[in-house]
Every structure is written in C-alpha cells, then in structure tokens.
Amino acid sequence: MGSLTFIGLGLHNEKGLSLVGLEKARKAEKVFIETYTNPMPHLSMENLQKLLGKPIVRLSRGDLEENAKNGILRDAKKMDVVLLVPGDPMVATTHVWLRVEALKMGIKTEVVNGVSVYSAAPSVAGLQIYKFGRSVTIPIPTENYKPQTPYDVIKENSKRGLHTLVLLDFSSEKNRWISIGEGLSYLLEIEEERKEKVVFRGRLAVGLAGLGSDKPVVKGDTVEKLLSYDFKLFPQTLIFPGRLHFMEVEALKVFAETPEEVLKLYV
Image (cartoon, rainbow, N blue to C red; front, side):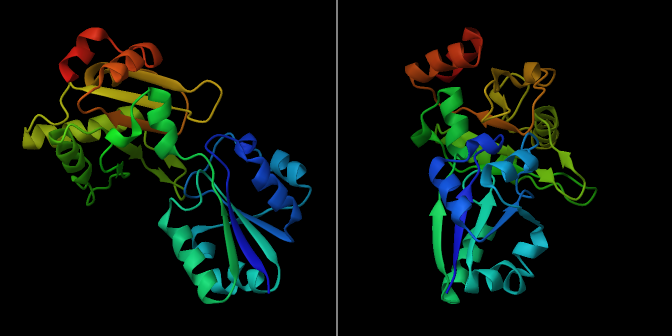
C-alpha cells in the first residue's frame, strides 16, 4: 500500500517549501504539483526539480477532480506519492475532497502545512487575526456573472467591527489575475447601485501584493487613493479593516504607510 502526502509550497517561490516538506518530497517515489489554485508566478519548476532531485508531474484541475481516481489516487495505491500545493494544502476544498477519497480507498495520507494568505495577509499588515470575519473572493466578472456576495460579506463584517480579507481571483484558462484596482472598481460599481456606504471612495482599505516575497507591497489608504496606486506584484489581495485596536493603528501607520487622518475614523 502506498501513501499520499500533501505538501504546502508557501506563497511566492520554491524557497517557501519547508525542510519537512523537502525531506518527504525527496523520499517520495512520484511527485505531482498543481498550480491552478495559485499559479505562483515566481516559482521555478527547474529549480524545484533540482532541489528534489527528480521530475515533477504538473496536474490540471481535471486531473485532481474528474480524473483523480484514474491518476494520482491510482498511483498512491501502490507507491508513496507527494502532491505539492501552493499555500497551505488543505485550504482549497479540492484537496480536502482528494484526501477524503484517498482515505476511503485505504491510502495513508499526511499533510505538511505551508504558509497561507489567510495568515500572511494579517501578519504583514499588522492586524490581529482573531478580529477577522468571513473572507470572500472577488471573481472574474462576465456579462452574466457578477455576484454581490463580496459586498455583502464586507457589509456584515463591518457591522460587527470585524476585518474582511478579500481574495482576488485568477483564471488558469485565461492566465488572468484580478488586480487591486479592478477589485475596488468591482465593489464601487455595486456601491453605486445599492448606495449603502459599504465600499465608498473615502473608505479605508489595505492593498497587499507579492505576499511571501522578500519585498511584499503593503499600502493602506482610502479606496480612492488605492485605485491609482501601483502595486506591481501579483497575486494581489485586499483587506477592509473594521474597528481598529490602538496597536493595529500603529502597525498600519508603520507597516502600510497609512495616513493618520484616515485611520482615526476606525478607532
């Protein structure tokens, strides 16, 4: 009987792999990687393969969903297999499902956690992680698909004084990221329609780009100012702060260069 080990890669490049993950991947008989949940633009497959000393098989969404039982799970029945995953392996529901299916088939599983945007974003901004409410993703809109869920989640969290982590979607088929500017414009369009003063031009927001790199970009200001700020790196993320503790105010001033006159409205 084989095994399936899920190993987190972190957020930026192959250097985010932990020593435990590296050791287990080197011992595995076969190594797979998926990057459709986060393409990790700074990841070098060549360097990663040199680091592990073996070839790595790249999997598509279909390989992990519709075809898993005839692919990665079939291999894991008879050999020790590793799946390398951006961020933390068990944050995406696809990987939870895959682990459940493996266990149902009698395959031994293990998880080696990695750095996730859910912990990295609050940490880099200096915000207290237990003061975050529900997170939400802004999808790539189409003519017939533009859900208002992100607006509603920010609204409900704000009512409770909680911060909101807003993820910005990526399409592997189109190789397209949503930028912070596009995400803010998406929310402003909903605001224009509903006029509930949830995401308006004078509201405080924090933009983050290149989390996991040695020089992430972190900037706090009004929505109006962030619309024109050059964040340069991808992937990008947004935080809409709720009520701020005095230590969070100081952190946002120093870590995110947030103007004091904007912060004082959220204490």
